[in-house]
Image (tube, rainbow, N blue to C red; front, side):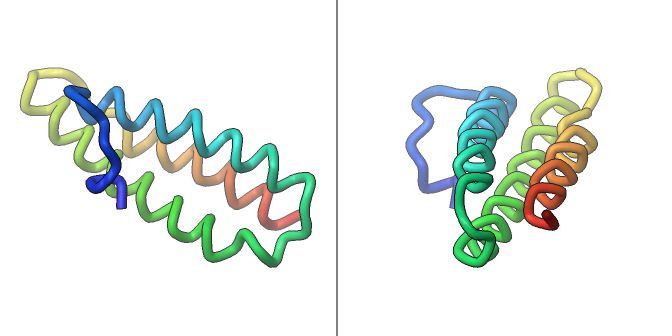
Length: 86
């Protein structure tokens, strides 16, 4: 889970951007391979992105900012599943 990954002194907002960036690379590589191997991995990534986005929104709310990461995560996950559906 993302909680176990070492993100030294980073906010959840920074962490979610890192995960989006890394997942984009996985999606790029996925397009070069057959779909079967990535289904379980993508399910795990989808769950982690959702959980991280929820924590980020709580962090943003507590600091008086507008929580927006969960909605953004939904859009990003649609991109992930669009790739898997092909």
